[in-house]
Length: 424
Image 1: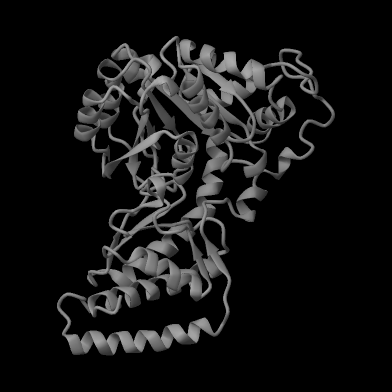
Image 2: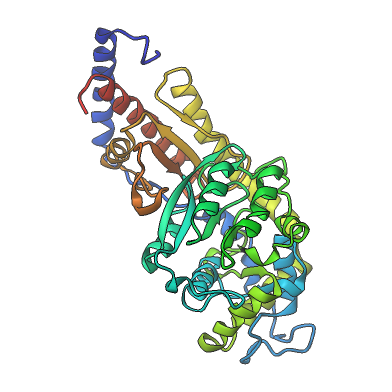
């Protein structure tokens, strides 16, 4: 039934029927979790060969004893893996610890406290600001909020961020010093940036303040569910525009191997790498090279990165199909929300009717289904339309996900009906 074409009597009867169904579900005291994009145990098991793969041989190909100190920028063999993921030369890659978020935080702090490539530290500006495509990744926003960097919302479209607005803001405000980007299968919308969008981003270094940086979080560079989505190379575009210093790229194996024991990478121009290394020398004597060597051997002796990611896709695909099937069957032509159909990544983005997202999340929680808090995909946790909800299908078993989604669509229907009836 279409919510807009139904009579008041039909809406009332429908709401009464669904409420009774919801009350029965609440009696089961379920505990289902689709909050964060964590790999499932089945996915983690794909990389269990990492355990013991070194067999007591801790020397890298160049003779480095990985058990000892040193190696600030990581092993060459590990940096080659990062180069493959980011499509950059090995010479422009640093391999770090298990988290790309740590490297992103380090990079933002470097820009804030010391500046990049001799440019003014952001802390010396009156009001440093970051552009934030929304909906976006909450942990990006947390970094800025912790450091007191103001965040400005930029709407996401099906080609990437609204570049007309991005260019306008950058031209008008010299204190805009960065933009967050998840360019492939963006978190949470699943959008992959178009060639035109990437070319325009690469040109920002010509019009922005000298210290401006694009934080290119390519977290899902190899996370295709089926058809491979080609992401144009932003490094190539910046070289063509003489703006190579304007981009810092990030990736990791966090959702490729063992999520808590992966290897993270940052790729950048030599000037940017020099700025990062200058600060790294004060904070570390080197990363976990034993783990880096384990990963290098895993992807050369046991499997290829491509083959390994195909196995991930085989596990994830049915879960995404489950989510999309529930949304399609329950909500198509009901005028109760809209959603994206991602081709990769880890999330499905759902938009309720305006003013309904918080109520849907609360109702789902009361029925035993935990979702990411409404508003989390916007800076400061404030979704101006109270509509976006991020669904993370990866972690629960398929049977639990199926149950969780049946409850989710029920909550969407109930909240939408009550909104239409003026009850919320």
